[in-house]
Amino acid sequence: MTPDASESTAITETPIDAFESSLVLVSNRQPYSHRHEDGEIVVDRPVGGLTAGLDPVMQQIDGTWIAWGDGDADAEVTDENDCVRVPPDDPNYTLRRVWLSEDAVDEYYYGYSNQVLWPLCHDLIGKTNFEDRFWSRYKTVNEQFAEAVVEQADEESVVWFQDYHLALAPSYARAALPETTLFQFWHIPWPTWDTFRVCPQRHELLDGLLANDLIGFHTERYVENFLGCVDACFEDARVDTDSGEVEYDGETTLVRAFPLGVDAERIGRLAGERDGSFWSEFKAEYGIPEGSHVAVGVDRLDYTKGIPERLDALYHLFETRPEWRERLTYVQKATESRSDIPEYQRLQSQVDERIDRLNERFATDSWRPVVRIDEHLTNPELYGLYAHSDLALVTPVRDGMNLVAKEYVAAQSDSDTEDGVLVLSRMTGAHGELGDTAVTIEPYDEAALADQIEEALTMPDHERERRMDALRESVLENDLDTWLASLLGTVQGLRRMNTEQADDRNRQETKS
Ligand code: GDG
Image (cartoon, rainbow, N blue to C red):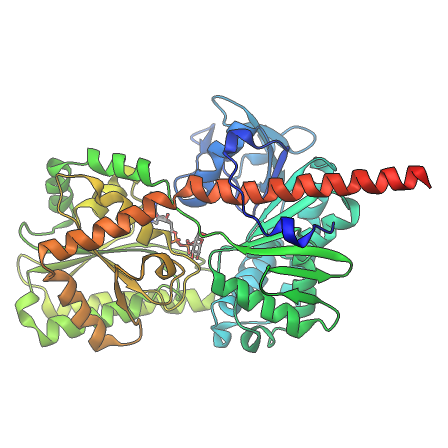
């Protein structure tokens, strides 16, 4: 597929209901899983983030979603083609499950995806673990996904791969689907060539991704990094950094930034429904004293999120400015993640130790500096927590986008609660859009971070409102729908162009 440069550079916006093609979405995680409970089969539904955001899109388009069937009852409800119609109570699209053995999950998911690609793309080379068996398995699992794609898609389909678990599947699928439009969204950063070139499989990974017609990243910086890697890795690739186009192996791939947004209107509405009585009950449940300021952090327990660094800054603040003791409570909503990997176990111990140290050193009879919440909060509870917290601490050492920052802003829209302050690391993708009006921090500078937390806590009302108004405008304007419309609009433009070119070729062949 070779789109014309001048046409392909235009990003168009297509409302989801005007999307014309049949969509095949491919991701590691599935939108619904079936499991046994008390002798019955129950369904777990998407609770947040992208899976929940894409589910309504699939319902509207009636496409096919291909994903790993990880539920213990998944196989019992699928048909002979491994498919089940979802949502279970009002079925209107197809979920095709891919079966992975325990070893496959261990080596492809916990191995290559999360011990090679995850740290590599977050510029943390010291945390990579390049085991041969991880790579072999990554290849075979990507082949498995590609086989499912080939069974579900045809020339008319548009196939959308999600994320770093599936870097090779596009090239495997391309061999059988030469005319099908393939595209991929990469949810994590893309590193510079200096980092990426340490990867022994750099050629294969780039070759796999360049089988797509379009690759999307969160920011222009990741686009530039990716194009730089292609340019350095392949002598025979032609890279046009102005148009974002790569010509490689006779095909053209467009590389673009599409910053992901959140469903801001819905978050604001749900947050607004959580009034003062919710907040009083919440504080009573978690032992947060009335009158204390509240700072919130919501993270998967991941070493990219800067949690130990944040806790060290809070220790520094309470140590050097004792007047904040009993007047500030930090709520850490922590979600356990990837606990089978040693680096994650180490991180969990570091976080545990720091929280214990803070609470042992500073707690009084009526107050603890850190309240840790391990259990899952429902969306309304989470958005209520955002709405009532005085500040959000988003301090990753590196993060592709960070949706928590945008959700926090979206939840500030209720007029009953005062606007909060967003404290945001320069190292997040979200900083590109929100950095001008958030309080920008450097995650590794403990003393400065403590100062900035204090600055956020003492910010005058008019300044807090001014900043939050600007942040809200940006988050509402660049929401989940905007992201989908510009991504799918661009894909639709490419698809039309590819179809026209194929028709031209056919006409010429018929003439000759
Ligand atoms: C990757 C990239 C990129 C967390 N606890 C609860 C809960 N959450 C939800 C948050 C938010 C999501 O989890 C976390 O999203 P992030 O964007 O912060 O981070 P990653 O999981 O690392 O995601 C990241 C993202 O992909 C999308 O492209 O932004 O850079 O690393 O939505 O709200 N939700 C509920 N209860 C909880 O207890 N309901």
